[in-house]
Image (cartoon, rainbow, N blue to C red):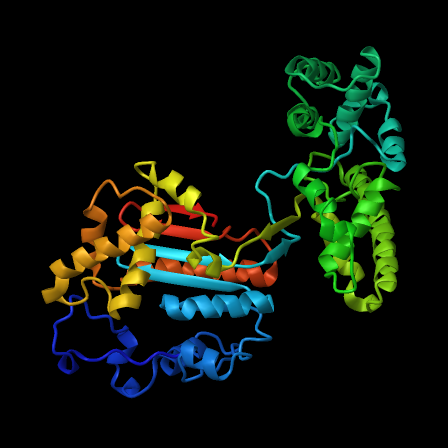
Length: 480
């Protein structure tokens, strides 16, 4: 999107506190070119595989003359956009189902607002995901493999090279027999299980590495295999249960997984199939790896066939869901996620704005919600006076009064009390609408990262709004 190049100091009768020109406009070769043209030119130089174009019109002009311009876009990123343009743009994109990222840099404050109606994530990459070993509910091939070893009869060199899954499984079976089939739950139960594993150690001089790993694995491997609450919520979601001809692959596959859980899986998700590294000889580790992989492939095949049946019943093409997609879905099923957002326009509607949440946050002395209020007041100021507060030196004191008035009106609309300090107002006016390189670079990097998340559907994006305070280097997120 293009905006006119800023005026030079000679073109302005009033001195500005900051020179807001971007550095590439100082190049003589770029004089007379629009910001969109120069930005496109420089971006194309970064990577020969990148293709791009520019439109030398403002967003306002495009919305008025060609409202369908944005249809077909995967994602729209808006920067330095005023409220009077943002509201119709967000409404247009929301109706079209196109995600919108609004990035803003203002003095030492930065913000990112993500507008997406529904964002589904298959590969969310959780930090604390544990291996899916199924020791509490072993499938036949795993049970046969683990029971095939008589650990007491093995020589020391072979005993120390059995994958830790085997001694852990056998110790678990022994413990359960001693406790009438109960499963270890408390710390006391798991300590008893660790003692059983230690008794199986054959090396009198030191602990065998595979047994040490088995003892450590008690923390994460000895637990009931269940469908995580977040995943269960997705499987019980109305969009999963009541599919339509317009249902997306994510929901159709989720329904196929739900049918698997309710039938073949007997309450469990398809096996993930991945195996962590462990001390073992190559032969036994490869056998164990193949056992998990084959069971995982079998489960994924059942889900894929069910997904194909659902596609047929919904009159959708069979190739809408590939076997590779289903396998990847089953591999990451325990951490799939869905994020539903709100339209930016609703924040500017007094009837739908979350005034109570804003008021509650403002009651906390160190809440960064105050910066959201400041940014909204800046939009109000610009809409009324067509300039940023403090943009001109000789208007600074007057702008402070005007800015306080804009803030008071906003807080009154939200039924909030006055701000406890005026320091924020003076600081905002001192910025004079400046965009600092360091803050802009940080916000730009964060926005680019969120854009990649949305496009690739990997990792969870920011939920709604991010506020960045460059003075304290703190960030906060808010959902409106």
